[in-house]
Image 1 (cartoon, rainbow, N blue to C red):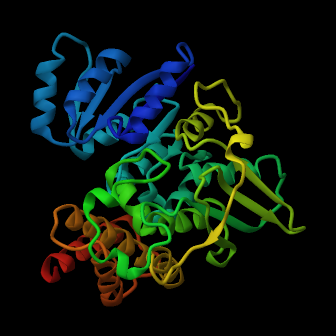
Image 2: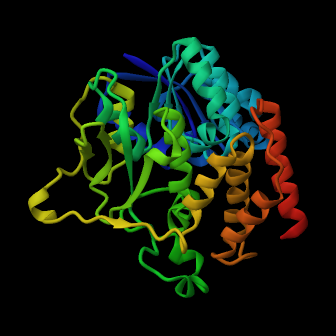
Length: 381
């Protein structure tokens, strides 16, 4: 039996992780669940999975949850200290980091220090602190198991290659809600349009990032750290069917790809059971009914997210933090109706242009850079 702690249990990845757990009774135990503010769903999860610990970011929400579950033995904690306690529960083997945002960095570091394997679904952890996280994991003998479908596909394609280095990583993208649109067609898009991903069931932040292709830029930076490759070795392919989840080209130009239905439970389950595979109640991939698989070049002059990511990698140091933090706040402004869809790119570009790079940033520097970025946006937007 594997024992899990789940950060972000009420979000898209968290709920699908618990669905995988439910499909395999007896294989998993939940030690801790952590959520932001959705205590209605968290209460339901607590009553089903009976963790020993539950963490809520907001103390007032935590106090409310304590009253709701007073009939159980579950202890409720809050804030960053609560998140850290939830990932360092002694019984836990694997920590699933499924929170959105840089809030996931410190708990991930503490989980590594505690010797926990990390099932990683929090992009920001590697985007902003990859140079710290990967070294910590190596030093601690901890495995970083990617949960994102693309990075899981790369991980699976490299499995069994016995040290053969990739020549190129072929990172696929659905193209998001606005694939094929020209810039002029994006000037007046509405929030509800940006939230319509054609293939994937994701949370609102990630769905908007898919529409701007910023999430593909974040994944480029993640892949750079996870697989120890340069930015030049990562090529983005728009693949509308979302069947080829990514591929690896080797030195002999052979390409190994991982294919599957667009169901996040597949990479989640692979990370939880690695290196084993188990049955999963999901749609069967029927290539006859699909008929054809197509690939397109991404138009980075319109969908500028990846271009910013490559620029951030070249600048190095604290620049990826600025890219990530600027996008995070810009998406929030778009959701609030304060900026247009295309102005998300303008906010990112403005912040990156204004930033002086700090090389080899420590955690405190990363968090200070995030704060600087937020303050700049508040003063200008």
